Image 1 (spheres, rainbow, N blue to C red):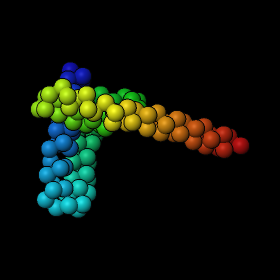
Image 2 (spheres, rainbow, N blue to C red):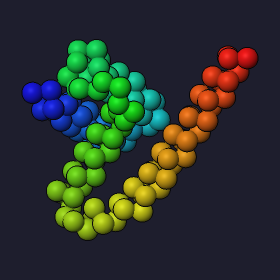
Image 3 (tube, helix red, strand yellow):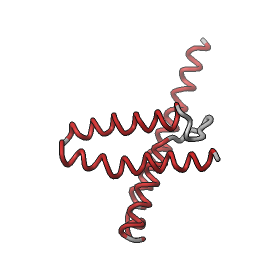
Length: 118
C-alpha cells in the first residue's frame, strides 16, 4: 500500500507542477513562478513527507524525480513518443548533473567529517 501511496504522491506533485506552475508564470510572470514554487512544493512536501503519503526511508532521491518522470510521461502521452525521444538529451544532462552534485556532496561531507575529527 505504501508503494501505491508513493506513486500517487509523486504523480500528484508532478501534475500540479506541470500544469499549475506554467499557468501562474504566464499570468503573473516571475512572481507567479516564485509563488507557485512556494505553494506547490511546500504543500506537496507536507503531504508527501509530513503526512507520510510516500515511503521515503533514507532515500537519496526525493520529489524531483517523481515530478520529472510525471512531466516527461505527460508529454509522451499527450504528444507521442517523439516527445520522449526529444527529451533524452535533457535527461542525460540532468543525470550527469546529479552525478556531479552527488559526488561533490559526498566529498564535502568527508571533508567536514575529517575536519570535525581533528
